[in-house]
Amino acid sequence: MTTVSIENTPADAIKSTSDVTVGEVVSNKRGFADDSDSSVRKMVKLSSDAEDETEKEETEKEVGLEIDDEATDAVADSADGEDLDESGLTEYDFESDPDAKETKKLWEMDPMPPLQSIKITKNTCNQARAYLKTEGYMKFLDLFVPPDPTADDIITLAKLLGYVPNDVEKLRKAKNQQEFLHRCIVYLREAINRVLRSRTRLPNFHTLDDVCEALKKAKNILILTGAGISTSLGIPDFRSSTGFYSKMRNLGLDDPQDVFSIDVFREDPSILYNIAHMILPPDKAYTPLHSFIKLLQDRGKLLRNYTQNIDNLEANAGVLPEKLVQCHGSFATASCITCKYKVPGEVLFPNLRSKKIAYCPFCAAERKALLQKYDKMEDEGIYSRRFEQINSFGVMKPDITFFGEDLPERYHNFIKEDIKKCDLLLCIGTSLKVAPVSEIVNRVPNDVPQILINRDPIDHCEFDVELLGYCDQAITWLCGKKLGWKINHKDFDKVLNSGLEMKVLDEAFGSYQITDEEQREGKEKISDEL
Ligand SMILES: [Zn+2]
Image 1: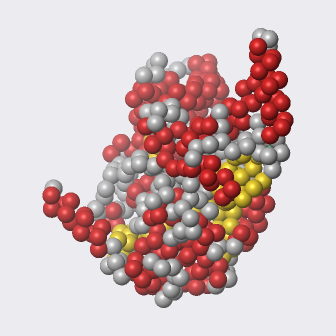
Image 2 (image 1 turned 30 degrees about the vertical axis):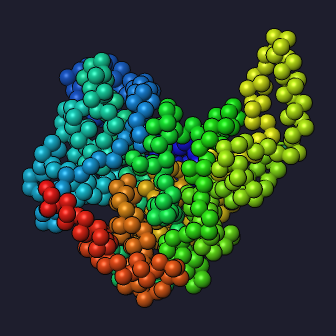
């Protein structure tokens, strides 16, 4: 688990994206070539045509250098809510658009509608993104930015790309209009970058038959999984409103992620020991979705499963260790934080359940000696920073990856080759918000089909097909009703016979939904009550 969120792309991730425009445009660490400042400059020029040359130059300098930092501060100030990401951009909630299919391309309309009158829908967003990717950002700006753009024009354009600054109202309180405009330009720039480094959808892969064919043909399937594949067993997810982090907030922790901070653990390991019982994996359980991964393994189709889960349920389902990369570690093993002595994870479970700190046998004597020594020193009025970490000296820690720790070596050992080898990518039960796993989708070769199976769509990615619904139901429907594959799980038949139905949400975008009878009745009930 790292604190990096999706916009902090590793440099190699940017380079590996095959889109030509990316190579040209994205080059420095902010993901924007130096030359690109000219586009921002150009926009500022448009708004300051009346100013004389000297003033223009000063304005340009500001945009390139200083405004960046100020905007970054503003972002840091506002990043105290849930799920805000560090760039200060949030995905935009699109307006619904019943006649989306009849809409002509924006630039084919005569005349093209002015920016402020464009209805921002998923459809117009896709058009704008496609234009940006195929034509490059200069042409994109030429087409969409009106003469004398206002800050609101810039915000609208960011929205059209699917992103909105987290706190527009706070931005509006900027010292003056010019500063407001500059800050908005910084956000637009980030939005443009995100689109440029995202994947382009395949032109001919959006039906369920395409999905079945791909699954039948594939020999090296890469699967990314997240909390959504385990929630049917009652294991809490982390980021939802009822998830683990909001429970931690209710317990009074300012930053709930602190329970997984390595610095906090070093100072006070009891915090982890007090809450760990809430996230301990259940014994031997696994879901039909886990069994589906095993099924692909048995059919010789599984290249590897990269899981962000720490529950180790893949092992319960029989997924082989060599087929599994636990990107954020797991409870499967535990290590002494001081000497790295490793034990099987279960050894620690009784302590975690009873909230008693477990100590390493090899470090016990030294710990005792140190405690005595530090006590004596404190009595003598001596202080050392080392005292602060004595609490964790020789303490056993589950091998889950904490914020501030690097990802497991296995991840780095496999990911580069796997990205080259994979012939189908499945993303299941994850909202892809935490890097570097979230960046894998943009790193696999563009011609490899990508399929999402998740409760909610993910607007910041470009999947060829999305199957929306509960993971177990979606995969059971796909295997049982479409592929004729039987998943070896005790609940397979039960789920298969729960009245699963598939609804085409949007065939052109490859969007489908799976529900069971209970959900449909529940929905009817709600709509009756309304
Ligand atoms: Zn030890």
